[in-house]
Each structure stands twice: as structure tokens, then as C-alpha cells.
Length: 238
Image 1 (cartoon, rainbow, N blue to C red):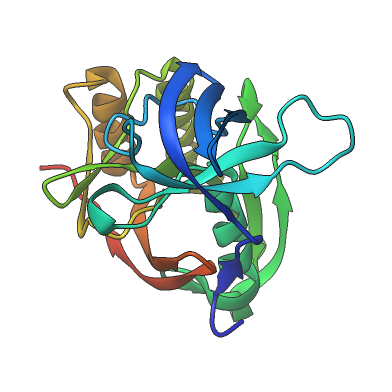
Image 2 (cartoon, rainbow, N blue to C red; image 1 turned 180 degrees about the vertical axis):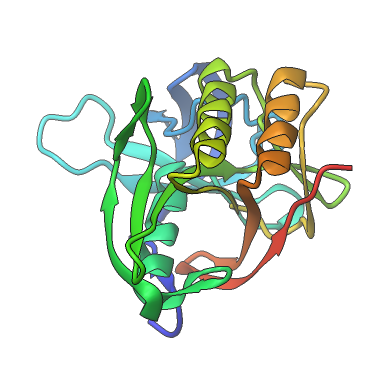
């Protein structure tokens, strides 16, 4: 594997049929209808559609109820990653190899997953070479329209609460807060909060940015075999 990125497991091609509920869908594989796990809590409005090509990853573990999980789709010929865990995997690779914008890997002393702060947990905690604590929240973005990647695609009370806690952490002067939106599709070049879907989240994101929280969109080259870091762009409230 070249550069900062992750390799995908071998994938099985199918045709998306329908979403049964939040976490299950039906897919056609080699002429048979198969029920699969949907590893994303969002609505996936612009990422799945009946008749669309899709790609499945085997579900590890003997005796699992569903043999596959919906891993990728290809609306309009563009790759879109559905599995929300891929975003955290990409950030782990960045912390080990690339670092974060303005915080290269050589300045990272240590990092941990799922640190506690306030009333909950964040995705990552980084301690830099000066002993400063960085709390990081990662968001998986697979919704886009007219070249604009958008988050969320469904209301998220928990997401807005995390943003307000990061703003509080930043204002306390204990360290630095980060929100990293990992864009999991290749047909977008700009990121914006989806105000029409969740105005409270959009407002909380603006408040966090004004408090000094680092807000970045992470962009990657995506294909059927993996995903490699292309760069990042800062987001600033209008």
C-alpha cells in the first residue's frame, strides 16, 4: 500500500434492491436475493438506489445472521463508501503516518481511541510533543449533491452534543478540539453542513468553529481496492 490510506477487503459485486430498515437491506448476488447488513445509521439518500451496482464485504465471524455488509455503491459511476467504520480507520492511518493539518505525525507523542471527556466519549485523543491534549471527533460523510459533500443526512442529536462539548473543551483552554469530516465519495469537492436536514447541528458546528475548534474535510482517492489520502480543506462558517 502506497502513502497514507487503507486497503479494502475483497468485495462481492451485487445489485442493490431495497433498504428494509435502518441496518438491513436486500441485494441481488448472482441472481439470488440476499439480506445484508447496512453499516451506516444515515439515510443514504444520495448513496443507494434500487438497481444500483453495489459491493459487499463478507461479515466476519461464524454463525453471523447476515453473511455480508454493504460496503460500497457506485451512483453515477462514482465510488461511495457506505461502511462508516472506514472513516475512523483512515484517521488512524493519518495519526500514524501523516498527522493532522498543522500537527504532523512527528509531533504526536501518543494517541488513544475513545477517550472520555464531559458526559461522553470522543473518537480519538492525541497528546502532542508539548503535552497538549487534542480531542478529535470523526464524521463519516457519504451524502453529496451537486459536488457538495454534506453532513448529516439525518438529524443527529448526539452529533450536535459532541460539537458543543468540543467547543466547551476549547474554551476551557485545556487543549484543542477537532472535527474531521471524512468524505467517503469521489464526486464532491466542497463540504458543507446539511442545514436543511439538521439546522441544530449546523449551528453547533458554526459555534464550535468560532470557539477555535479545528474543522476540516478529509479527501481521498477511492477505488474498489482501497482509499488513499488526497488532502484536506478547512471549513469556515459563512
